[in-house]
Amino acid sequence: MRVVQFLQVLLLLILGGYLLLVSLENPGRMRLPLPFSDGEVLLPSGLTLGLALLLGALYCALLLLPPLLQSRIGRRQAVRRRREAEERLQLTLRSRLGEAAPLVAQAPAGYAPAPTKAQPAEAQP
Image 1 (cartoon, rainbow, N blue to C red):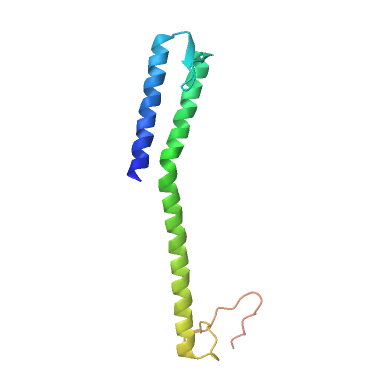
Image 2: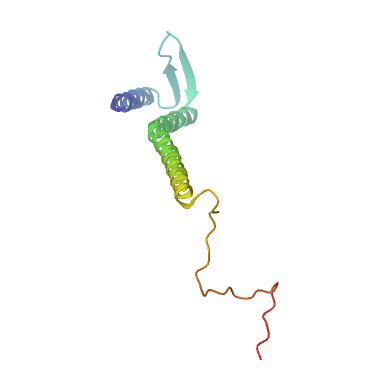
């Protein structure tokens, strides 16, 4: 993983140096030599700056992508482990209580629920 980040930083430095040298050489319109051919592209300075910003944004996305993917995978694994543990605990509880007993929370003795609008309260003498 550190090798990928090292290569990304190295690529950023190469691109930054390339844009700096080209901008110093051409103040108005910029000639960008094509890296794998003898040709060049003539662009206005604003468009060149926009392209540089776009390349920087793509580079930042590449830097952030591995940690984001790792955290997402870690969360999925944690949720899956928690769900499996809950299922095991439910199975254990069912086996101890017996299959006939439903898993319903019962109110403690002496507990009376408060009356609701659907259930009118009994009149007290």
